[in-house]
Length: 293
Image (tube, rainbow, N blue to C red; front, side, top):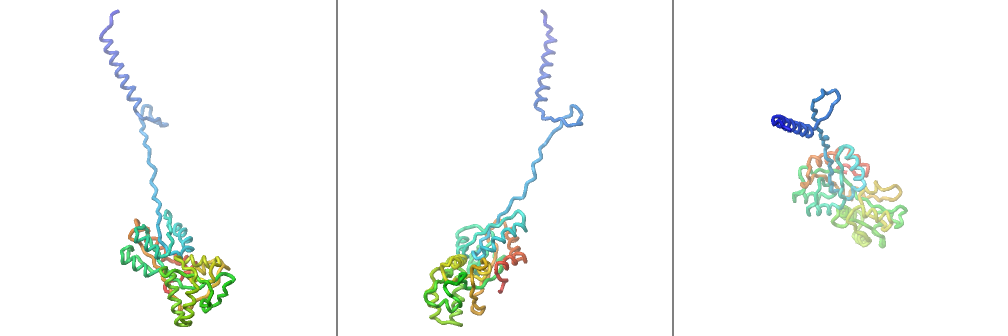
């Protein structure tokens, strides 16, 4: 049989064209849209979901005596500033100072000691112009409910055989306690009272809440703490003996932004909240006094 060469060539060309069409059609990403003209290629494109603002966590180094208040401050600030949470590092101010000096990262410092605050300012750990007075606190003597040690006055603290707890000499509450005792010794009592009182001390605590715990558990007959701890205690757990204002040592707390913060704007917003009426009301609810007492 005779094969027409021209027909073979044409058939081959048609086959090649058909393959090209099939390959092109197979590689095209098309979609059928209702109402579209047949043969129209619809290109679909996925849209990336909108990005959400990343949540922020502020690290606040806080004097341990604000433990109760911090449990309310954190949620209150998060409600006022959606997307931001607060993590409190609670300890004695002397410990917080050491942690910052050893390289710990924080956004804000709440200090119960002007001595330590000033030291950190001089050492360059705080943004000095942001440091502000925050609140204040007086020293008070607490005894367990029922008063098993029969301590009814400040004079009884100098009776031999009593058991007393107080802060260590380097913790702010311990510093203020010693200042108050010195004033009482000079104004009302004598060196015998002073000497016996210190002989009665059976527990020195590095955090003010530690003194409260010793008294509440009845491990001591009395303890020197901040007024705020007495006012924040569960009703019926403690009794108080007031130290006169003239013999007392008012503790001023400060707040400031640290130089290690990664977000000064967020840290400033927290500081602003703390000195605002809302922040001050929370502190007042826990027995803290306004600046100046």
